[in-house]
Amino acid sequence: MIRVMSFNIRYGLAADGVNHWHHRKRLALARIRAFGPDLLGLQECRDDEQAEFIRQGLPDYHFFGVHRQGPGDTALEMAPLLFRKAAFALLDTGCFWLSETPEIPGSMSWDSAYPRTVSWARLACRTTGTVLTYANTHFDYEPAAIDGNARCLRRWLDQVGSGTPLIVTGDFNADKASAAYRLLTGDNALIDAFRQVHPHGQDETTYHAYGREEERAAIDWILASDHFRVLEAQIDRTREGALFPSDHYPITAVLDWKT
Image (cartoon, rainbow, N blue to C red; front, side, top):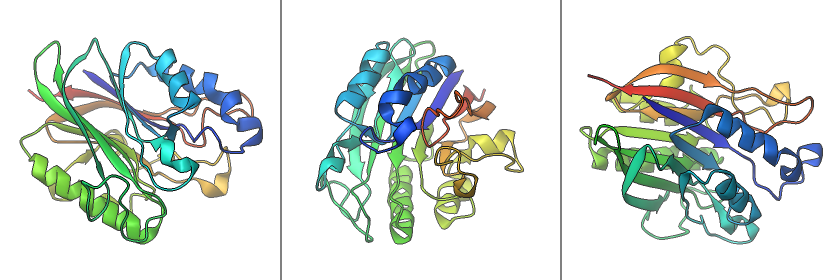
């Protein structure tokens, strides 16, 4: 079995008052530890004391992230992936930008507000030797950029090939009625782990803006190729009174290899 989590932890410099990173970081780390993922995709993780806190708090994990670059303080943001070293052996890693020139660091297209990346790792399961590719991303929020980001990611998925076991996590900044969702899950490209367990899409909200009902949206997804079957899929809505681990709930899935 492979335990997977996707979690937008909200960048540490955000002026979030009682939900500032310094107040909620302990709770955010506790939710990761409570699930104990083998694969973990984070979004909005800055390569400063925020990333260092995660690294120190998860010493049993390999951490791979690349600065998205661009102007200002946001250049240090990453969409890093982590994997449990006891579960996987690292074969290769890479990163590309969601743009018309994905090989150019910091590149942007489609009126994107920021550069956006995909981090990926090729991993071998230590128990079986089976090889998979794991990718993590954070799409832009501008409508044209969301569609462009999805097309760019889909091209990469097609290049990796349908014969390759794939797991993709991310904050896609789009709901499940969007063209981006259809592009990534259509034609048997990838399956939505949550929808496999909850086919009617009930209660699948992940973004909540610290409990604001009017902001709720199902924009964080765990996707997988048909090499896997989904045993469990949940959204962790743990909070401590008015304190949330992030403005997104972490989403989790337990996958197993198809025989």
